[in-house]
Image (tube, rainbow, N blue to C red; front, side, top):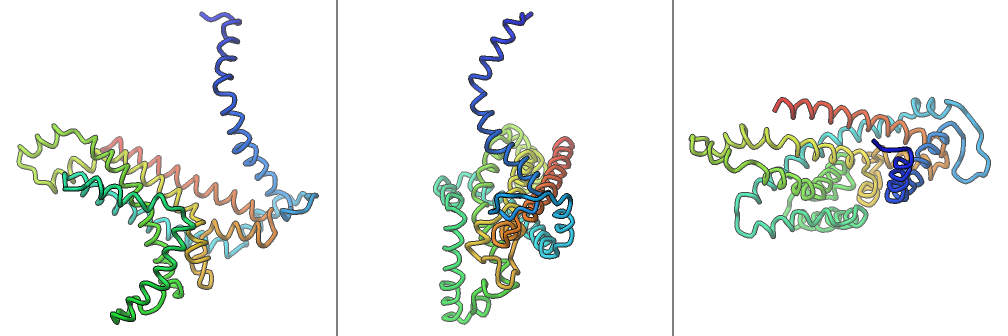
Length: 294
């Protein structure tokens, strides 16, 4: 049994190693988060020295901001589509490059490479592709689908953002799925093969159930990145044309820093945090139940 002196000695030892990390975490994350909540009850414009307390007025403003809720609804659609496509493409890529194909290491590196490019740079690269390369090819080859820039069409601009998002993140999720596929017991697969199970049956009955933990992680990461998309949104479409691709994170930024209504923008950011946290927690909860059942 530890004495009081021994307990203090152990506490001091832990603080030596964890203290700097805890201090940095509190300084960078906890304190700004709490201060941000405080700002939601003020009318601060982001510049003025003085701040007036306005109570729940900013949250009332959030409920009345139709643009915010329109952007959030569009973001939900964007997240739903990108989560499905990203994980489907990532799993197919992972399954393909773990079948022992020749040069599969190079394919893995190539599929992962887009994730190493920053969202701003990636957006400008694909902006050039959509505005110049595809339009030139469409006009020369008489392909009506690419006859005009997708980024100038309110309907196609959304899908351009989806395509680039899937292209960027599928390689990263592929790595997680590869790790999951490599952990599938070989003896189970061999026993199923001996019993006459085909590759499709083994995929559906053995591989997919054992891959549930990987699906949980990838879906969680896809949700988080989808809701927080900003850099790619700014550089590829700038929210246009006519705000048809303005995701909720971009709207919150514009409300706080461009419209100079930091209190309302911070309130919208906090409401967005609550909504995203709720969605992700529900996803983890139901995914864990699925994992147990599997």
